[in-house]
Image: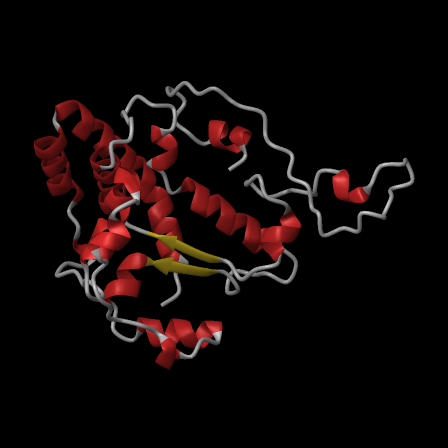
Length: 236
């Protein structure tokens, strides 16, 4: 995301160092093209109105799929995996509010819906991971929407071998261990709509301690508005 966009969309009481936004060059333009000033068009910063650091032309070249997860699952899962992967992470880090938010997905959705040529709300495929995993018939409908042959989807596999895992390092291993240990899609016995936030707060406090649990609960609450916004627009 554009650093300035990030700074405007995190809680006001969180300090953050705003770094310069990198200039991304669109090299699809001919190197021989010139804007009349002697500068190659391919060396000029690409046009950008979207909230990321990527050129509009790049985002417009693809079909947007926006995948989100319930904050009460996403935020603790990220923190848990980061700790297990030996990342130097703290709830006081500048990046904690960034990683514990769904605002960035919402901003990208809004940009596509209102700015991208030829795009409208139905062109953007917003996917609730709970539907993807647990909703019967969801995958066939998604395949039909994308023009993908459902028969070529793989729903079972062999666990990753020790040789494959050997040189991946603690961070990659932590974030991918569930996939590597699995033999197929792991379906949940509880749908996300059944999550009781008050119960989850108690679980967070018990697992991570009062301070971390309180911070997580705060960011879950902050993310719920964006979660519900995306859920209302989800493909189903």
